[in-house]
Amino acid sequence: MQEFPIAKPSMAQFKWQDMEMGMFCHFGMNTFCSQEWGEGTDSPQNFNPSSLDARQWAGIARQAGFKYLILTAKHHDGFCLWPTKTTEYSVKSSPWKEGQGDVVKECAQACREEGIGFGLYLSPWDRHESCYPDKETYDDFYAEQLTELLTGYGPLVEIWFDGAGSEGREYDWPRIIGLVKKHHPDAMIFNMGAPTIRWVGNEEGLAPYPCWNRASEARISMFTETMITWLPETPQWLPAECDVPIRKHHWFWHPDDEGSLLTLDELMHIYYHSVGRGANLLLNLAPDNRGLIPEADKKRVLGFGDEIRRRFSKPIARTEGRGNEILLTFSTPQTLNHSVIMEDILHGERIQEYTLEINQNGRWIQLVHGSAIGHKKIDCFERLETSQVRLNILKAEDVPLIRSFMCFDVI
Ligand code: FUL
Image 1 (cartoon, rainbow, N blue to C red):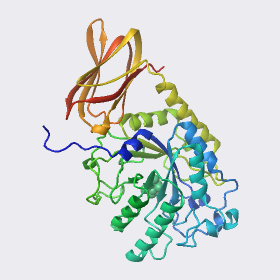
Image 2 (image 1 turned 180 degrees about the horizontal axis):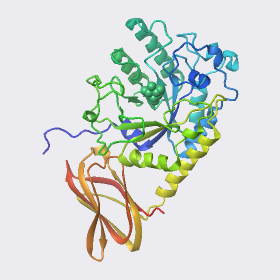
Image 3 (image 1 turned 90 degrees about the horizontal axis):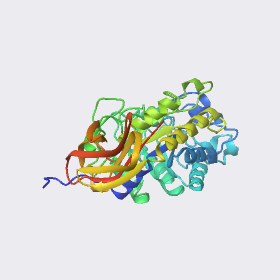
Image 4 (image 1 turned 180 degrees about the vertical axis):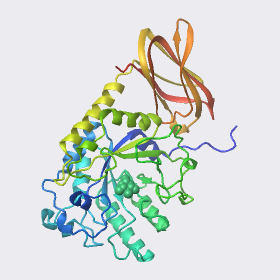
């Protein structure tokens, strides 16, 4: 008997983990000024994409296998991509569509049309807004911005609260979280207030191993060593999301920067170390100053999606089951070099230690010795021939429940 009940995901967290991959879109004033952290002083006149097409962004996301897209509605520079009532510093004051445009609306619609989830990033740190130093006034201002976004754009799957620039600053988290819960009870809350998902701890897209789903696993802010204080209602189950830009260190588009595009091998490395370790991957693709994802980035990310499908869409065999030993038996010997295991996490992350073995002429040979499985664990090993693979659970908090156990031969 366990002393404490095992942590379990809410149905919304479970569904979010099943999506596995999201596309981040950093777009805004910085796109037109070739900078990462604008100071909030650039004129709205700069914002003028010549051929913005959010359908292109969402279409690329869907084709590459992403199940959701998150747009930076407001980055640290304070410039708003929707015609907010809270400030003049928005698309409304820009030449784009003569001030009549709404990027958030176009993007929300595009995601709906493409059948993927939509989420929003709203930076708490605001370098433009003059009331920012006045905590209470800014809390009202931020709550109003958030309310506009939560009520005007249909269903949202995730709200991304970025801690950058906010070290030592307290916001009205009970109110902010209350607003999200009121309007979108199933939306994931990223890393602040009372989060339902957590930051993985780096911007390289790499989860540590093991990457347990428990809240106690990571409470460190990115820019300081201080612990983040989360509200007591933060759930015990808190899966990780790995955010990383497809162009090294650049979240926003910059001219003549294609050399920094990650290679397909680098992207696959990220995939194995994020999704393959049970975390979600949030890969950033930045639209350029035309308002389009550049051809090179598009090609690379579609190649990434193709490669994932090539490797993992045709298992040699698949099974599921409960207990400490799960066998996969083939009718004729098969060569294989990958396994993909999923725990039925709806009942908690029970497995703490496992091995994977293959039978060769009656002898069991150990290929893998691991700890966490969680939502998904991808293991890659030497290519061998066998007619039987065995998953042994050596240590578990409760009866192991395997949602799926598959083997692949990836050449
Ligand atoms: C960081 C920000 O400072 C970067 O500009 C970017 O938005 C990244 C996703 O989060 O904290």
